[in-house]
Length: 247
Ligand SMILES: NC(=O)c1ccc[n+]([C@@H]2O[C@H](COP(=O)([O-])OP(=O)(O)OC[C@H]3O[C@@H](n4cnc5c(N)ncnc54)[C@H](OP(=O)(O)O)[C@@H]3O)[C@@H](O)[C@H]2O)c1
Image (tube, rainbow, N blue to C red; front, side, top):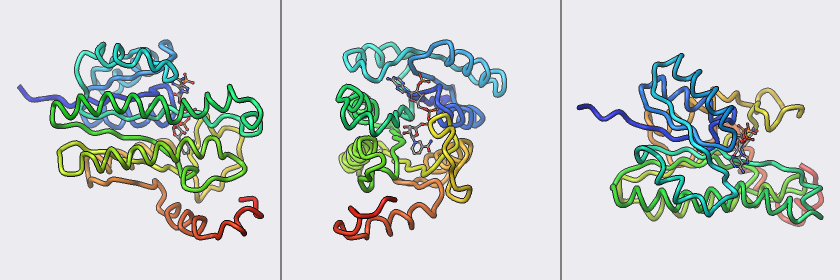
């Protein structure tokens, strides 16, 4: 019998997660959606199943509850071929400067939780010999800025973790893909004024991820290539100047 590939989205209620799940379902993959809002996940699962005919299941996951991770992974009916983590929290930078509980929530949501859960999947993939891990990080992780350095630092940690995982599995059939989307029009950026040329729609992120995994394998992608150029320039600014400008 032909093996139907399976795709797990951690953060299945996010705009990017939903769009990417739909893209892989259209390609005939079986879908798992995980997140903390089961009602939202089930609504999404029903929609994807109705539109594509894919089999879609949902399961509960709170990325801050690291003690539940083994049970979560063991509770999946199969070990997925591919996992995508889109869970993230921008948070409130000025609040995080004095409220350590909020700062910790940002750091644990973007870095600690995803890194620990990836570690469990990495071991399972290593035992099986195949698997793809996709982490949605951010260009904010490439240089700390006053406007969002708690978020940025946690994404920097995630980017480094993914890079290390990729290097660990470099010669095997296990793949690790890092996604740096730039601005995306989602619930996270609602109300912000985003420059049109630099902003992607969730469906564009989904297609870029699909391409990087299925069509033309890539390790690290910027959804809009102009972001690679922008970040090269931003990273080249000397620190004594960078600390004086607000960008
Ligand atoms: N939008 C952008 O401009 C942009 C740019 C670069 C990177 N990103 C990254 O892209 C990813 C997806 O974000 P998005 O733009 O699609 O925003 P979003 O719709 O706000 O997605 C955030 C996701 O994280 C989930 N989440 C937060 N805390 C969680 C927790 N404790 N346990 C489980 N799930 C939790 C949310 O679940 P609930 O539905 O339960 O809240 C939601 O599914 C994030 O990692 C974000 O950092 C976004």
